[in-house]
Length: 197
Image 1: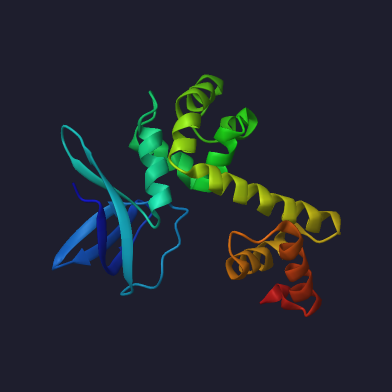
Image 2: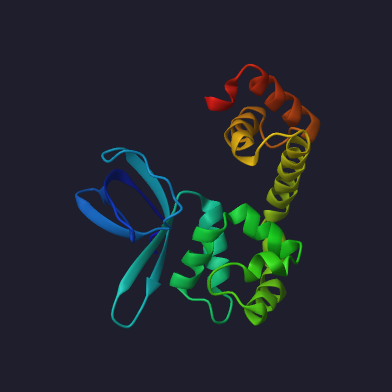
């Protein structure tokens, strides 16, 4: 019904955001893991409307990928909108998709509200759906990122110092970059003292 909203960001709370479109203020429930720009900045949010007996609630995401995973999680028995949001607050969509496709039950059971039975249900009900929805490319890209991270850790760099530089390099080189190119670019920046940037 309401798939997308764009407007100035009026408020950010622990439960979500308030944004304005056409003189209307929309309260959108969002993940606490989302990062928002300063108030007044125009933002775009992909939304899903949940209809309850006593309320209408909008859940929002900064990317179509987050929204798609949220709707897939809602299709799993025993996971409601709040539970799906909790899961997405604890794991970014690519990492969650990777865990489901790779059948990583240890990762899944570490998420809030996911026990062994629910983890098995996630694998059973979502693995094929994720692959059909195009998450396979993201899973493959994430695996490449993990390889680059592992290589840099093996060279003696700390996870925290690698983090920001690695993210910057991946954004510059794009998803098609191979592991060797990513590692080389990170080492080049860190050699210049770019890790603190």
